[in-house]
Image (cartoon, rainbow, N blue to C red; front, side, top):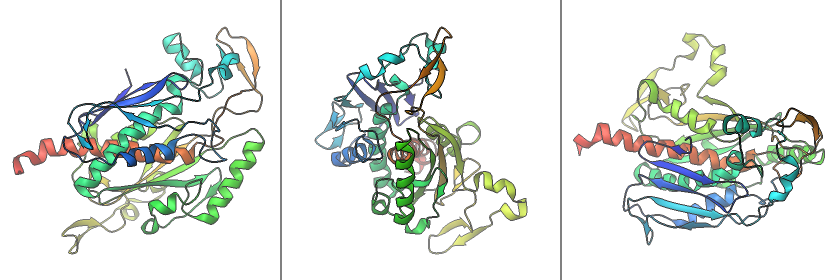
Length: 365
């Protein structure tokens, strides 16, 4: 019921924000994949709360426990279950929110759909659910690296109205993680951090844009019509908490161009022994199928909904109230959302790689 993602390389996440634990069951991972368990933990560390002064102070180590599917460091081909215990949950912070619908939160819609919801911390609507996605995505990234040396790089491109213009050929994982806001331009990053802290002091929040680049993409991934690669990427990334927009390639800017300006001629690359495009305006996908160019995407995240300023809202009975939220929340979700974006892209690509092999390569072996 909406908790499972993927067709072959498939994850199912479970757990609530202030429950006993959160986690994931990953099914469909090929056997005998040599895993670096430390890399799974590293991705969770990039996502975890309390990692800097611009993230929520909730103190969670987010140590992963692998319960099944691995022998030593090799995958068995059976379901891989991973769990992270909640150690610093404070459900009492939400006692005053019972049946009070927080503005721009999922409280009201969960109540409309189910008639009941986990009152503390948003339950399944909390970004804490993404722990399972990041753990599963960390395995997907290792599979992609082994099979095609695919590299997924996401970074904070904009915070509020502070923009950056990063040259894609200069992006490295080290530059992305060189500062707490995860913008690989240190000067712009400093301005972004100051803006987040400024709004944090006012009890307010902000959003922004994360950009994602995928290098060493093989051609041929994606299916025509309903299972286009960009359609599955859009679904994956728009399923993340707080997302409000997705672009690939020229995106909305491309609508300002004429056809003759936007069309991107093919050329033959002797170095790579394949067709390529001159400007990659399609962002690496044409007709729903990858063309071998880098994937280039942008994902918009709204401002954090929980703020400390007083706001008008209503209860489930329709009574008007003034809400001043308590609890521990990020003034800006983007720095911690970077590994979430990485993971969802990795899960889509791993799934499509296995689908492509099953349909189009099995007779060529």
